Length: 193
Image: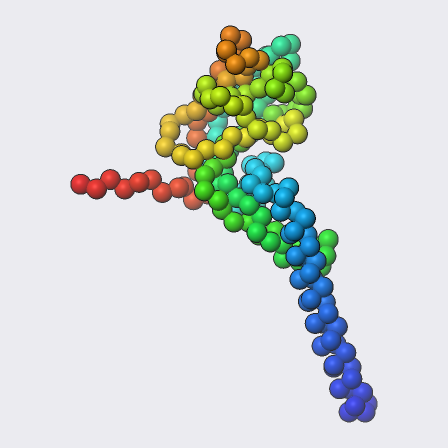
Protein backbone atom coordinates (compact mmCIF):
# COMPACT_ATOMS: atom_id res chain seq x y z
CA UNK A 1 0.00 0.00 0.00
CA UNK A 2 1.25 3.44 -0.90
CA UNK A 3 2.58 5.59 1.96
CA UNK A 4 0.31 8.53 0.95
CA UNK A 5 -2.80 6.32 1.09
CA UNK A 6 -1.87 5.18 4.62
CA UNK A 7 -1.51 8.80 5.69
CA UNK A 8 -4.88 9.70 4.12
CA UNK A 9 -6.58 6.77 5.90
CA UNK A 10 -4.96 7.75 9.20
CA UNK A 11 -5.96 11.43 8.79
CA UNK A 12 -9.51 10.42 7.86
CA UNK A 13 -9.79 8.26 11.00
CA UNK A 14 -8.41 11.07 13.16
CA UNK A 15 -10.85 13.56 11.60
CA UNK A 16 -13.81 11.19 12.04
CA UNK A 17 -12.79 10.62 15.70
CA UNK A 18 -12.66 14.37 16.31
CA UNK A 19 -16.06 14.85 14.66
CA UNK A 20 -17.48 11.99 16.79
CA UNK A 21 -16.11 13.47 20.03
CA UNK A 22 -17.44 16.93 19.19
CA UNK A 23 -20.84 15.48 18.22
CA UNK A 24 -21.09 13.51 21.49
CA UNK A 25 -20.06 16.58 23.48
CA UNK A 26 -22.67 18.75 21.74
CA UNK A 27 -25.31 16.03 22.16
CA UNK A 28 -24.53 15.83 25.89
CA UNK A 29 -24.71 19.62 26.19
CA UNK A 30 -28.06 19.72 24.35
CA UNK A 31 -29.53 16.88 26.43
CA UNK A 32 -28.31 18.46 29.66
CA UNK A 33 -29.81 21.82 28.67
CA UNK A 34 -33.22 20.31 27.99
CA UNK A 35 -33.13 17.92 30.97
CA UNK A 36 -32.00 20.42 33.60
CA UNK A 37 -35.37 22.16 33.99
CA UNK A 38 -37.21 18.90 34.59
CA UNK A 39 -34.50 17.34 36.78
CA UNK A 40 -33.63 20.41 38.86
CA UNK A 41 -33.95 19.29 42.46
CA UNK A 42 -36.35 16.52 41.49
CA UNK A 43 -36.55 13.64 44.01
CA UNK A 44 -35.84 10.08 42.93
CA UNK A 45 -38.71 7.93 41.69
CA UNK A 46 -37.60 4.98 43.82
CA UNK A 47 -35.10 3.96 46.48
CA UNK A 48 -33.21 2.04 43.78
CA UNK A 49 -32.85 5.11 41.56
CA UNK A 50 -31.73 7.14 44.58
CA UNK A 51 -29.05 4.56 45.31
CA UNK A 52 -28.02 4.52 41.63
CA UNK A 53 -27.60 8.31 41.69
CA UNK A 54 -25.49 8.08 44.84
CA UNK A 55 -27.88 10.22 46.90
CA UNK A 56 -29.46 7.54 49.14
CA UNK A 57 -28.78 8.03 52.86
CA UNK A 58 -31.03 5.40 54.46
CA UNK A 59 -34.19 3.41 54.07
CA UNK A 60 -37.20 4.33 56.21
CA UNK A 61 -39.89 2.30 57.90
CA UNK A 62 -43.46 3.68 57.93
CA UNK A 63 -46.02 2.33 60.39
CA UNK A 64 -48.65 1.35 59.73
CA UNK A 65 -47.51 0.36 56.24
CA UNK A 66 -51.10 -0.20 55.07
CA UNK A 67 -54.46 1.24 56.12
CA UNK A 68 -57.92 2.06 54.79
CA UNK A 69 -58.80 5.61 53.77
CA UNK A 70 -62.16 6.61 52.29
CA UNK A 71 -62.92 3.07 51.18
CA UNK A 72 -59.49 2.47 49.61
CA UNK A 73 -56.70 0.25 50.88
CA UNK A 74 -53.51 2.31 50.91
CA UNK A 75 -50.18 0.49 51.09
CA UNK A 76 -46.76 2.08 51.42
CA UNK A 77 -44.24 0.25 49.25
CA UNK A 78 -40.95 1.88 50.27
CA UNK A 79 -39.58 4.96 51.98
CA UNK A 80 -36.13 6.56 52.09
CA UNK A 81 -34.07 9.64 52.90
CA UNK A 82 -31.78 11.03 50.20
CA UNK A 83 -29.54 14.02 49.62
CA UNK A 84 -31.17 16.66 47.46
CA UNK A 85 -29.45 16.72 44.10
CA UNK A 86 -29.48 18.37 40.71
CA UNK A 87 -28.43 17.18 37.27
CA UNK A 88 -25.02 18.69 36.43
CA UNK A 89 -24.38 17.27 32.98
CA UNK A 90 -24.76 14.17 30.83
CA UNK A 91 -21.72 12.30 29.51
CA UNK A 92 -22.60 10.86 26.09
CA UNK A 93 -20.64 7.92 24.67
CA UNK A 94 -23.20 6.82 22.07
CA UNK A 95 -26.18 9.22 21.80
CA UNK A 96 -29.42 7.77 23.22
CA UNK A 97 -27.73 4.41 23.88
CA UNK A 98 -24.83 4.90 26.31
CA UNK A 99 -25.26 8.04 28.41
CA UNK A 100 -24.23 8.76 31.98
CA UNK A 101 -26.03 11.52 33.93
CA UNK A 102 -23.82 13.19 36.53
CA UNK A 103 -25.55 14.69 39.60
CA UNK A 104 -24.37 17.10 42.28
CA UNK A 105 -25.62 17.23 45.85
CA UNK A 106 -27.50 20.30 47.06
CA UNK A 107 -28.07 21.47 50.62
CA UNK A 108 -30.82 19.57 52.39
CA UNK A 109 -32.56 16.24 52.03
CA UNK A 110 -35.66 14.61 50.56
CA UNK A 111 -37.86 12.30 52.60
CA UNK A 112 -39.65 10.17 49.98
CA UNK A 113 -42.09 7.29 49.92
CA UNK A 114 -43.93 5.35 47.27
CA UNK A 115 -47.34 3.73 47.31
CA UNK A 116 -47.78 0.17 46.13
CA UNK A 117 -50.53 1.02 43.66
CA UNK A 118 -51.76 4.19 42.06
CA UNK A 119 -54.61 6.05 43.65
CA UNK A 120 -55.64 9.30 41.98
CA UNK A 121 -57.53 10.72 44.98
CA UNK A 122 -54.56 12.76 46.24
CA UNK A 123 -54.96 16.42 45.40
CA UNK A 124 -55.37 19.65 47.30
CA UNK A 125 -59.17 19.29 47.35
CA UNK A 126 -59.51 15.68 48.48
CA UNK A 127 -56.62 14.02 50.39
CA UNK A 128 -53.01 14.88 51.11
CA UNK A 129 -50.04 13.94 53.28
CA UNK A 130 -48.54 16.48 55.70
CA UNK A 131 -45.29 16.17 57.63
CA UNK A 132 -46.29 16.81 61.26
CA UNK A 133 -48.72 19.72 61.15
CA UNK A 134 -46.80 21.94 58.75
CA UNK A 135 -48.80 24.30 56.60
CA UNK A 136 -47.98 22.49 53.36
CA UNK A 137 -48.55 19.06 51.92
CA UNK A 138 -46.02 16.61 50.52
CA UNK A 139 -45.01 17.13 46.93
CA UNK A 140 -45.77 14.31 44.55
CA UNK A 141 -44.55 12.87 41.30
CA UNK A 142 -47.46 11.29 39.49
CA UNK A 143 -49.71 9.52 41.96
CA UNK A 144 -47.20 7.06 43.43
CA UNK A 145 -44.23 9.08 44.73
CA UNK A 146 -44.52 11.56 47.61
CA UNK A 147 -41.68 13.71 48.94
CA UNK A 148 -40.88 16.44 51.44
CA UNK A 149 -37.78 18.66 51.47
CA UNK A 150 -35.95 18.76 54.81
CA UNK A 151 -33.00 20.78 56.08
CA UNK A 152 -32.12 18.71 59.13
CA UNK A 153 -31.84 15.00 59.93
CA UNK A 154 -31.53 15.32 63.71
CA UNK A 155 -34.72 13.50 64.68
CA UNK A 156 -35.67 10.04 65.94
CA UNK A 157 -38.90 9.66 64.00
CA UNK A 158 -41.30 11.65 61.80
CA UNK A 159 -45.05 12.00 62.05
CA UNK A 160 -46.97 11.97 58.78
CA UNK A 161 -50.65 12.87 58.68
CA UNK A 162 -53.01 11.81 55.92
CA UNK A 163 -55.95 14.18 55.95
CA UNK A 164 -58.56 15.83 53.78
CA UNK A 165 -58.62 19.21 55.56
CA UNK A 166 -56.24 21.66 57.21
CA UNK A 167 -58.10 21.47 60.52
CA UNK A 168 -56.97 17.82 60.78
CA UNK A 169 -60.45 16.69 61.87
CA UNK A 170 -60.27 13.60 59.65
CA UNK A 171 -56.75 12.19 59.90
CA UNK A 172 -54.67 9.02 59.91
CA UNK A 173 -51.29 9.39 61.60
CA UNK A 174 -48.28 7.44 60.39
CA UNK A 175 -44.84 7.23 61.98
CA UNK A 176 -41.60 7.02 60.00
CA UNK A 177 -38.31 5.88 61.49
CA UNK A 178 -34.91 5.25 59.97
CA UNK A 179 -34.10 1.83 58.66
CA UNK A 180 -30.78 0.61 57.38
CA UNK A 181 -28.19 3.30 56.71
CA UNK A 182 -27.12 2.81 53.11
CA UNK A 183 -25.18 5.88 52.08
CA UNK A 184 -22.95 8.31 53.88
CA UNK A 185 -24.69 9.72 56.91
CA UNK A 186 -24.60 13.49 57.24
CA UNK A 187 -22.17 14.79 59.80
CA UNK A 188 -23.68 15.79 63.10
CA UNK A 189 -22.38 18.94 64.79
CA UNK A 190 -19.44 18.32 67.09
CA UNK A 191 -19.94 19.38 70.71
CA UNK A 192 -16.94 21.15 72.23
CA UNK A 193 -16.10 20.84 75.91
